[in-house]
Length: 263
Image (cartoon, rainbow, N blue to C red; front, side):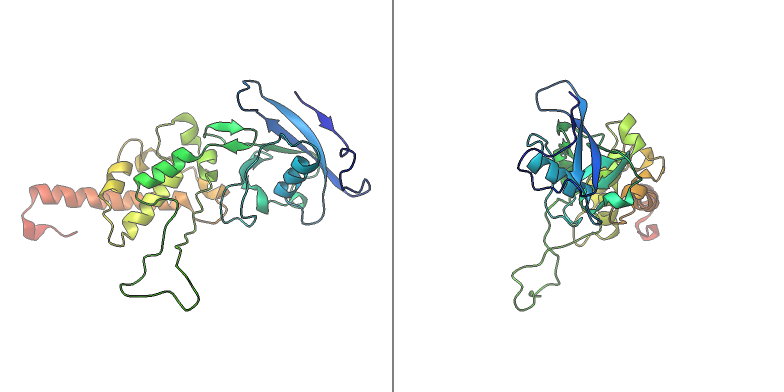
C-alpha cells in the first residue's frame, strides 16, 4: 500500500525548486482492514503547518486522503493527530519546528478509527453530556443582563476545546477503555468547582468510583499534550480533594446531628 510520491501531478501549482518535506502518513481506508503508510512530498515555507502540508497533498496528490479540520487556529480542536509520535493540533504545528527529515503522521489513539487521520470522537462528546457540560454552550449571564450593542448572543468559552489529545495520550485509557478519561474528569472538575446553579450530583456519581478520578495515575501525559493549557491532570488532582470532602459531608449527613454538618 505504501506509495512514494516525489513530485506533484502534472498541473499542480508547486515550484520544483521550493523547499519540501516528506510526510509519512498512516492510511486506513473505511471498510478495509489493511493499514499501511503512504509517503508524500509537499512544498513548505517558513510558516507551513502540518495541516497546510496535508491539505496541499489532498488537493494536488491524493484526493482520497481523509483528514478533518475547521478553524485553522486551535479553537475547534478537530485537527488533532499524532505527529512524530506526539499528540498535537496540526493547524498550529509548524514543520520548521520539527526535527529535520521525514515527518510521520498518524490518527489519535484510544478512539475508534474512521478513516486515515479521522477518528470518531462522538463517545467523548456523549461523556461530556453525561457530566452536564455538553460541547455547545451558551453563556450564563447575570439575571436580567443583555449582550452589548451589536452582539446578537453570547457564547461561553473555556480553556478546554474538547480536542481529545489528552485521551489519545493517556496511558490509562490505552489499557482500560472503561476509564472516564482526562477530558471528562477535567469537565467534572469545572462543574463541581463552579456549578452555576446546576446540580453537580450527576458529575459526582460519574467520577467518584473505580473508573473515575481514582483510576488516574497522574502521569501528566495529558498536561504535556494539552494545546490550551487546560491542565487536566491538575484538575483531576483537585477533583479528588473535592470528592473526599463530598464523601465526608455525605457521611455526616447520614450519621451526625443536623447542626454538626458543615458543607
